[in-house]
Length: 143
Image 1 (tube, helix red, strand yellow):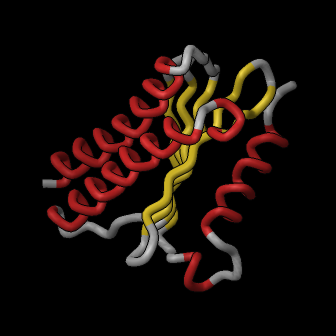
Image 2 (cartoon, rainbow, N blue to C red; image 1 turned 180 degrees about the vertical axis):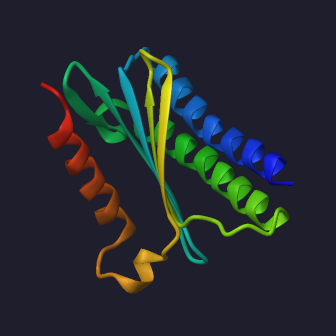
Image 3 (spheres, rainbow, N blue to C red; image 1 turned 30 degrees about the vertical axis):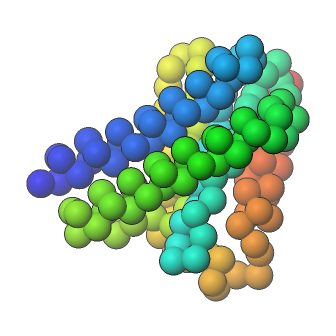
């Protein structure tokens, strides 16, 4: 049963990365790395992405029109709901926060999960948390 869960869990994350690659492709953009921030709890489903190219990070707002961002958000929320459904189906705890990094050049993938509902216990909004991660990633880029 755990194997089925792991496969389904990874498939949803791959779907999120594919969504980002599609957003890039449809906009004629390229990136060396894709960073995706996901957050979910009973009140919030949130996704944001930013893209590394030539030693600089770009937000979705930097690169894409509002309509494409809205479509990206809608599809991303569907993936978040799939993630929740998978965790529920396998009676597994669902992470509240996911940070995904995909290296487009090497095709390597890394992820970090947080199972605490940090919105409820902290003083920051989900947008502030995503911005903090953007800032952390920006500091760590080799320029």
